Length: 212
Image (tube, one colour):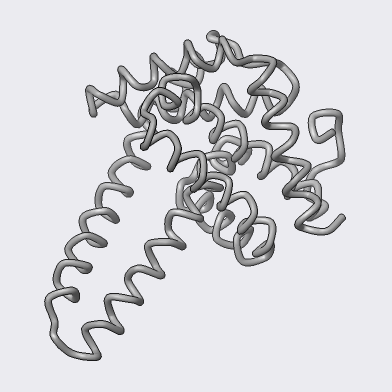
């Protein structure tokens, strides 16, 4: 199966999940939004959403008990992931501000390089949390490496899914309401289904009903 067809298949299955479990997604999404507003609870709430989405991708449905289990299981580990992203964010913003002030070709070049690296960092993040949950060894750096390898090995696949994420995030930011109707959870389900499909495509996991 081509990367383009595989990506469309993952998108179709994810949208079906969202359609059939929309109420559950919306309820858990509201909890995630409230947790994110506290800032301090944002990392464990995010890992909890991805864990619940991972269970959904295995065909179990989106259940509140899985959200609670994910919150408990990944509570401490989530802060390592959160601090890593805060550090990366500070480094990216400071670099963009610094190079953006340089009135030279080198300044423009370095500014462009930082933008390129930022895009790749966000792309890798799409795969990172699902890999962290799938891995037997719960190591963030290994999950980042696996996410990077997946992005490089499946560029068209990643481009199609990335375009959908940008579109849905754009609509959410513009309309606000979709944020509360399960869009972050939708992206979490998409990311988990994407990783599980790639594991099958790479021959690292046997095909099963959850990839249908």
